[in-house]
Image (cartoon, rainbow over all chains, first blue to last red; front, side):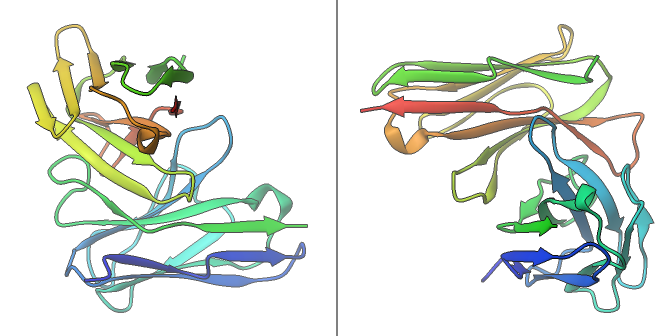
Length: 115
Length: 110
């Protein structure tokens, strides 16, 4: 099992460009999450999904969109990248309500720089 | 004030030492997690606990719900334990939401 796979691992964007980060999990998990990690701050939830076809906003959703068309995939999109979106992005998945009922399984992260 | 506070922020120790990392939180919780993030960046879940104590190998996690405090202990520390250790709590007020601490950077020197 690969677990949770994120692509790409690194990306540099210019301000205003768009991109999509892909998260794939092969554990048949219902719940998937996108977090960002910034220096001096804890992980912050951007968006999450409780099942195929559903998405919901987390605590820092502005500037991001997500889609969960297939159960195993959770896409994070940046329509018009800004330097404030320079961060390390982590995808995670869980069997049930992640953190409340079951542990989270994380991907290896995507380091995004917006110039 | 952060809902989750970890101490110390940085810890350097010699191989073989007993390590303690602390986590205090201010909200009611249903569970607390300890995560490990290696220099390569990947995050691994170490423990999920809601009461008492759990042990896995040289790692021990304890929680005191009344005092809103948890500790992560590492016995016989080794350089490969060098990582950032992150505490996260599942707030009973927050649906689908974990609140993460800022992490403790642990360096074990040979």
